[in-house]
Image (cartoon, rainbow, N blue to C red; front, side, top):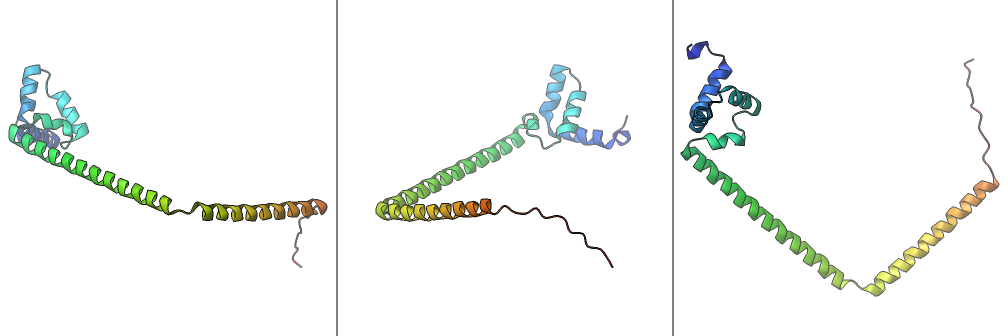
Length: 145
């Protein structure tokens, strides 16, 4: 059967296998057949990281170096975020040290007084509401003349 008579996806899989020579070796050693690998290829696609183990030596080295560079960049980003977190913590601690506790206590006292006044107003309003129960309104129907 020639390559031109094959389904396009099978032709693509053949090209994929040519780029992954270790896959050929594994199939020959295990004598499992191509069907499971083809199904995995169809489901996962060519870009899945699981195929990296089957690439030839040079491509695998290049991709390993790229992955290492990515890991280094991630570590640097993590260190930078830790430093930023430490800076923010230091700023908060500096602000806490400058805080005057006497003034803060005075503000809390005034706020507490205001809340008490609001509580009394609400109590008075509820008392007035209980003295004068609301009348139930009957629905009004408007008629056209």
